[in-house]
Image 1 (cartoon, rainbow, N blue to C red):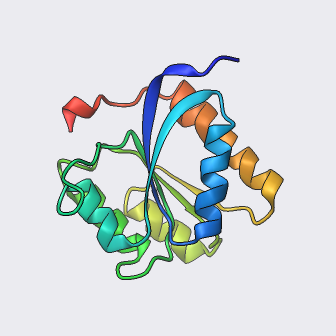
Image 2: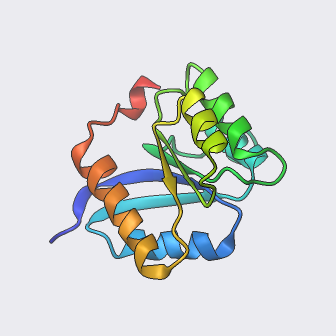
Image 3: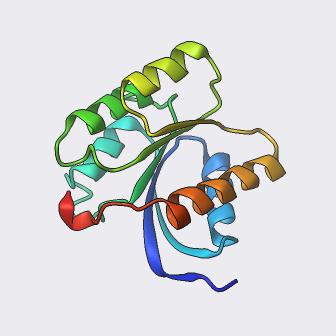
Length: 149
């Protein structure tokens, strides 16, 4: 299958370099053109999304992949900031984390996460999760235009 012409902009908020590498590989092997930007902590995530220094030229993402366990500002706080900001709250946030704790799942949905995915630890399952995200969120779902943010 040919790659889709539209480049989808994804912001990955993840502090684990191994998970960043796997995510990049999985999207590179996918069927769609994806521009993956990465920030490694919660403070950088908010700076990126609000286009604050050093991210003045950051592109507004079509979707956000958010780990919960982040340094400086954890993912729950980042999610709360995103969903309480009128300029950012329309961006779908996919929580992608190793936590399968009921409290984290409930809190994430209470903070208006668009979905919650338990991050698999093995290579093949991780790639399958990224394929499913690509298929559903980038091929099936109608996303708002960045100009509406």
